[in-house]
Image 1 (cartoon, rainbow, N blue to C red):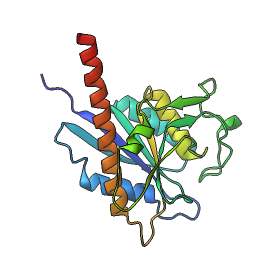
Image 2: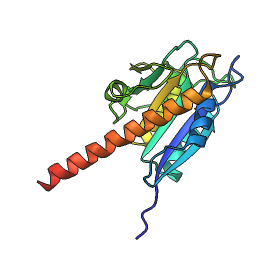
Image 3: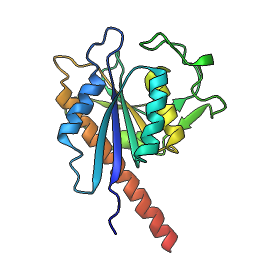
Length: 209
């Protein structure tokens, strides 16, 4: 039987406020050209999300319905960051900042009745410790900032039973090129997939004993 190829979806964001070039999407485009660089049958799909709560809600729901990825990676820009941040959790409340259409969710809530905090099944602290990327530091974070990135992350964790992550990248500069960010994303995603397979193999062994 032909197994359907396993799929990883990676999203970046479009322009917002004064950021006409969003480094998150530039990084994802680089990754798309590089591929995951793994010889396993993994299909990489990349999509741009607008900085728009309602549109994100629609598209994230569709990503999980249509592609059923084993992992969804959402990349956002943190305009004040100097490092890449691996975010462990998404929060349900506190979304008062307006998106590019001047909208924010009613009551500042992502999913009425949903858990306050949702955690990724991936241990981002472990990934952080085990990875070194050329040209930029990789750090761990538990606060994704309550804007459209955090909102996207929470929704994706909700729909994907925790099989999602959010990565914040700094803005591009003369010192930080999209190519560096693309390579960093490739290394981080590969590390996460390896860890998840090791975990699966480990639990299969345990089950077999």
